[in-house]
Amino acid sequence: MIRKVGSSYTPSIKDALSGNNVENKVQEVGQSNFSSYNENLFEPITQEQVNEKWKEFVEKMADRPSLCSALSNVPELTNGNKLLLTIGNSVQEEDIRLIKPELISWLRKELRNSGIELITSIGKIASGRTIFSDSEKLQMMMQKNPDLHELKQKFNLDFSE
Image 1 (cartoon, one colour):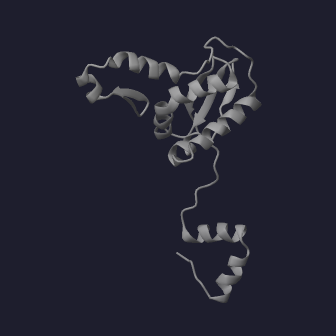
Image 2 (cartoon, rainbow, N blue to C red):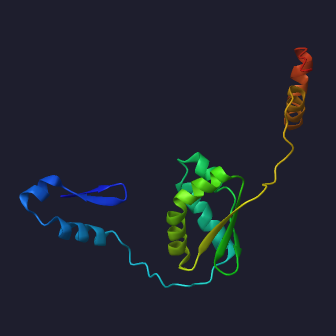
Image 3 (cartoon, rainbow, N blue to C red):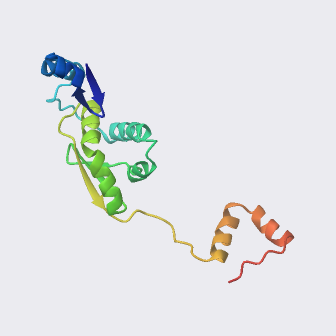
C-alpha cells in the first residue's frame, strides 16, 4: 500500500517486507496525480486576470493570516510576464519565499502562461500616521464614531496624559 504523507508518497513497510514491488506502485500513484497541464503555454495575461487569480489564491490561504497579510497587495504586471509584488518587511518576504513555488505554479496553470515570474520588493506601504498617545487614539475613534464624544461628556471621562 502507498500512503500520501504531505505532498509525497511513502511505501508501506508491510508491502516491502512481503516482497511486493513498491517502486511500480509509487510510479503509478504519482503519475495519476499529475494533471495534463502543458508547460509551454504563453497566453497573454492582463492585470485584471492577475488581480482575479491573486484574490482566489489568497482566499485559499485564509487559514494562514500572516501569509494573507503578506499577499494583501496585488502584484503589478510588468515586462510581459513578470509580477512585481511590493511587501512591507523581510518577515513577509520569508513567508512568500516559502510558498513561492506553489504560488507561481498555480498562477502559471490558472493563467495558462508558463513564463510567469514573481519578484518581491520591500518598500514602504502607504499607511496613515501612527497614533501613540491615549488622547490621539480617542480623537481618532471620535472621528470614526461621533457618539464617543457624547459618552465621554456624559461619564466625565478624562484621557489627558
